[in-house]
Amino acid sequence: MFDEAINPNYVILIFALFFLVGVITTKFSSRFGIPALLLFIALGMVAGSDGLNLIYFDSALYAQTIGIFALVVILFEGGLSTKWNTIRPVAAPSLLLATVGVVITSVIVAIAATYILNVSWLEGMLFGAIVGSTDAAAVFAALKGQNIKERLAATLEAESGTNDPMAMFLTLALIQLIMIDGQTILGTVGEFILQMGLGLLFGFLLGWIASIIINRVNLDSGGLYPILAMGFALMTYGITATLNGSGLLAVYVAAIVIGNSDLVYRHTIFRFNEGFAWMMQLLMFVILGLLVFPSQLFSLDIILSGLLLSFILILIARPIAVWISTIGFNYTWQEKTLISWAGLRGAVPIVLATFPMLAGVENAQLFFNVVFFVVLTSALLQGASISPFANILNLTGPERVTPFHTLELVSIGKANAEMVEYTVNQNTVIVGCTLAEIEFPSEVLINAIIRSGELITPSGDTVIQEMDILYILSSKKQKKKLMRLLEDSRSSSK
Image (cartoon, rainbow, N blue to C red; front, side):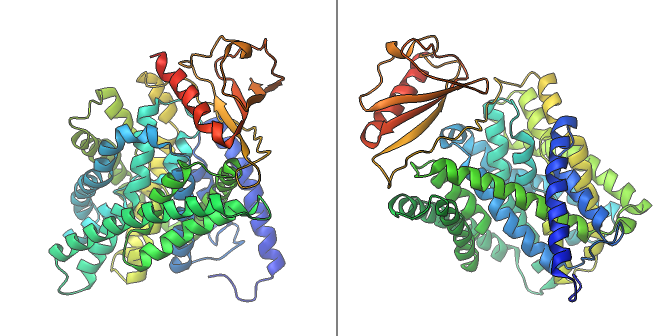
């Protein structure tokens, strides 16, 4: 734990250094292909008691609390950015990967862990459950800005956003089976159905309520809207988890509902949550890095056991789970291979590994150390090679453009008009047309065009080009007509 007498100025300075070094390491991670989470964990390990001894931290409870809070923020940001039209075609295989796939992965790893770690079958199953799910933070970060085909990226994002509840449920259920006499498997199955059902129910309900309130409340400052949205995310988790539902699933579902609604101050909400999610990723991985002691982690037994279990997880368990879960969904062998390889492990397994420690499971510390090593191996091998592997398999699509330009001059609630941001793609009919040739609805005006990072002042002779980012001022009553025009343009060319 932290020293009770520690100087608060020292703490502020340390966290300032963490944030600054974290941002710098993120720049290096994107340049050299090293996952940011790996560098954040390394930062925590270096600053910990086995490193520079800047901070002594050994509280599994605090690490678990911070980890769950961070996961709520990360899942909320991921759900906000998820387009329902994109994930709807892959919802079924994604859910199978998030449930059946997790179980298959857990069972295969459990069989191996029972013999490799010399533990009981139930403890082996517990280890398998802990590492059975892909990690939303790792997957979202690895895919952000990558040009992997949209269908595959949507499958991976939807799977990682919905499989954490399954892994958490299996972990807690197996701890109960190990520690509590009289716990039955049948009762566990009923509890799973209840948790998932409540997660879906409260996610849809609270997401719908949040969308209505965000749009109807007239706050004095636009900066309050992102805080309001985050408040709903935390409340969604709190209410659902308190009622024994899956809080993480509820947060992700609510975020999808909110993100696909017609929101006021949409860009402000999205940008705030993007930055907040990055901050929580940095904090979470640094804290988890502080929690581990490298002198214990890099012992010969842990290294050999971790490497063998990582090999089985990455090259045997995950591919088998993917190929079985995607039967009948028209994925090619190349696509299944990439989905298998992109099953990144990250913070979630490490956070789940703190549950046995707090419950007093006999081999909890062994599990934590091996899980940590498995995560490091997955991040280093898989995280750094997803994009090159996609290129080898010819599974890359058009380059993704993430606009950094925000024009949110007016918004619903403050005026009867708002700014619409639209990125022109290769299938859009208006490509090659001048603005004068496009029949926009009345009360609609293109205010700015961003082309290759440069601002283009629009005029009637301006020709629309692929990848242009259009900022269109539209009255509220004409916005739906404008969006229909843009969507019709896209579909009419197919």
